[in-house]
Image (cartoon, rainbow, N blue to C red):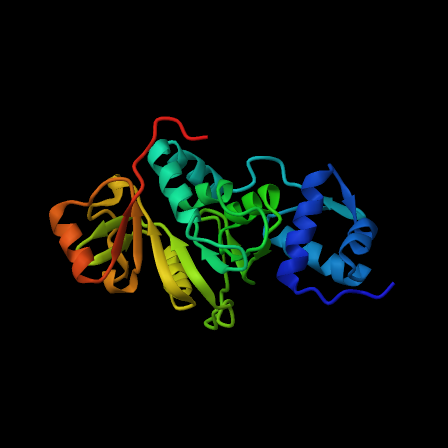
Length: 265
């Protein structure tokens, strides 16, 4: 059988999909299903195991014992806050996507909620968040691209440890991202690693859409991720405080309101 020439990120996504569907998957089964050689599959499994995404066993692989990612716990905890607002924001942001788009989704509890509302197929999605990639693989048939690099478990992101950005050749129509805080000076973050990821992703998109509920209008986060001028659209559940709203409008940011609903289906 002729072997395929899938990129490593595509093979990783296919392997993870297969591993989640059964308790144990063999190297031979993976080779047959993704069309790669046994040697290539073994190398892929070793790389995924070193990142903590799977557990290597004799002749194959299985999922790690839960919980497998601290990043998942962080997202799950944050997801319990302002649930109705985050769902409404995510649903509205998802409506900005059309079939055929190439998009980027940054990690976060609100962006994670987008997975439920995106078109089920026809999108090409780059994400540095393993948690979001996992959701997309499970819930949609969209093409999912993960950057090469190391999995940082606490943040749940994949990032190249080298200076050369692993996504420098990927360009998207839209980046969807969250924020720790939003002030007149820009988007705030508290984790230098996440700032590095987000600065890198902003450079690869034609427009930037920020998803943030009303609790983010503050000075939370001691690091500035970007200036307000880098943002094209803010999707939120309430009008920002006057000073922040004025700064957003002066920076040319379009504010889209998606009021929270008590129950969203």
